[in-house]
Image 1 (cartoon, rainbow, N blue to C red):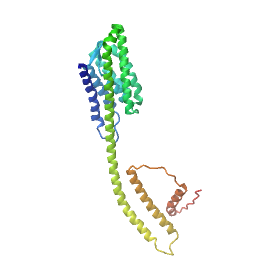
Image 2: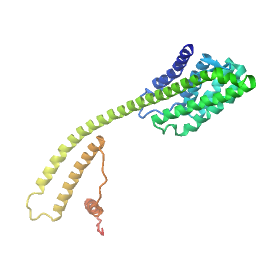
Image 3: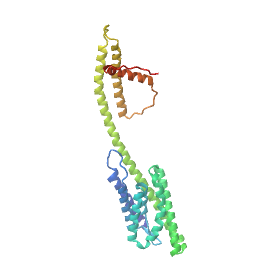
Image 4: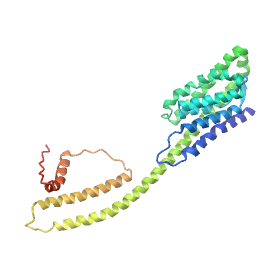
Length: 313
């Protein structure tokens, strides 16, 4: 029971920096979801591991055990190589200050069971939450296995192997189970915090798009009114049967009306973009498009004394 209380104390040392990281870094409301702050991860992991070392759970063969390696594993998985190495070095220094005579045992075991987290780091952010939890279990099992091998080697040098097998194996077994459980709990807590931060960031973006959509609807309404008036008067101006009217006026009328309709389509498209509607790929008549381009440029070409010749085929 006393050991379990010590484990709970270590859990508080581990989980508190996770939620503190969320409060200091992920709770901000930037334009985009904030990038990983490796400096904060390194600092929090080092402090958390140091506290676990200073208040150990118990000992196996006079070697202090506990959850001090969990912050180091999290620093590797979420902060990268540099964050993990710095946090590991700081924890080794703290362990040397606290228990200097057993530093060489840590130097033998530590590099081995941190090898697997270093392998997972590069693709860790691509894994889904269930995969991360599963790999957390594997990391915990590998850590317990390597510690057992290391302690077995030490027992061959200082004690009899039966001492480990009979008196300390059960303690090591439960210690590994606690380690796996709290490592998975820590990974789940980090993913839960990240998901909440991402959802909050998406909610902010959604609110901004809602404002843009409402503004677009208002602007579209104000612009469509004068366009409707202009279209009506143009139709009225060209509706009279004037025999002296040049034949080209009919083309100009159609051109102006088509441009007004195109302006309406642009406004409608702008509203669709603001609403984030999904679009489908459609086939396009290229010949018709080129004819429209030529007709649109006719008035400007005439103003510049340029004649446009079409050869679409």
